[in-house]
Image (cartoon, rainbow, N blue to C red):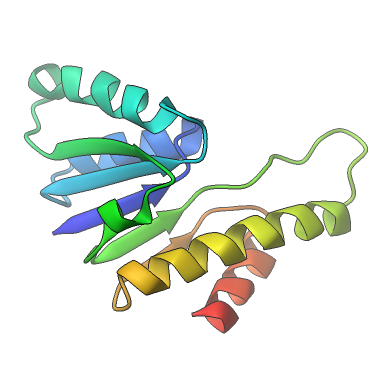
Length: 133
């Protein structure tokens, strides 16, 4: 089974690592918009494979959703964190655009995937993904 994790920050990388360690998938694709970031995180995680006892293939890609094709599950962790002084409405305004784009791209390449939303504010982003997909 193939799992995609969108967002290679701390939450996304931890999610990919946990999926591999628990042997939930044979392949994990880590995707991020920062050039080379997901690839680097994937290499770091693969170097821990023998230590952590997993054989899950973890690959990284920069904004290439074609690599996520036919994923059974997709986890959306992308978005910006809430900054001091930022209102919930401001966070929604920024992250809604990000999450909607991600959900649309996932739908195009993995139309049958189960999508798990971790992006904040989670309740609003989950509803947005539901409406988008």
